[in-house]
Image 1 (tube, one colour):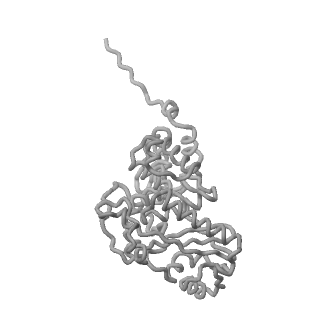
Image 2 (cartoon, helix red, strand yellow):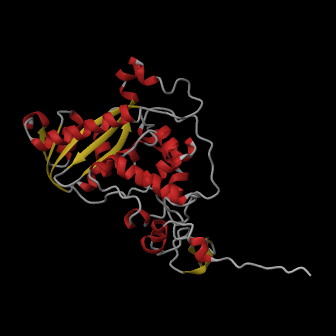
Image 3 (tube, one colour):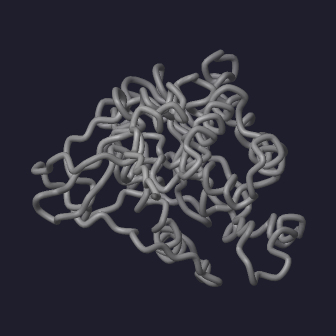
Length: 340
């Protein structure tokens, strides 16, 4: 006589294979307030998935987990992903080759994980107050990693590109007495409208702009009826020296330690750099994991890059990447505010 024994799944046993840090994130840190697919507030519990609860939306009828749409979305080795992010938080950014060796992962995995983490950095919507410092940083337009472009890594050594403003990627660095921001502006010459697009709404209460003696800065100051102060007139000011040193550190970090960053991604590195030096980069806190649009943002980044090249450069968008995903758009998001 044959006896068949059927074992029921043991949820507690499955949880034993998960770290306490990951369980804490799912149970206490991530808040489920709406359906990440359609934005509906009507959803119910729909069974369990491994160590967490599954939900189902009454509106779009799709199921989701607490981590759906966040930086943890579609991550299979979640505990290793936590270790990866914690290393970046603690030690700073190192080359992908070193990360692959340390965590025993493939180069594409290390690349994707890094950018998912960087994309989860929340945007700061607070206004600037009082006097602000502003400076223009530039890097050569970089298409690092884009396949099909001849000598895409070597164009930066060509003197022709160094002298041509049409190939200069502009970063605007702004700081008041409390906080700072770095924004990707355009590729080419700086104009007043680039300042307006990025910072006009945040500068309603400023009294003075201290910046380099450049015509575009003066026009922006005049347009806002704000005092324009040249850097050279405050050459011994300790705050200005600190601001300039911070900007130079960023340029050195991008050019030397990271060996250049593609223009497609450089805005995310701006956000990370400021978070790291101010010790406010915390990738698994509520303000990071409350964002449910990281996954579609990650899958649509090529479309945002194409839009940026078309609108804010004089260059031609070419050699698009061919990576595709089944789910890319969140239905309730009608407008995207990219890190540009």
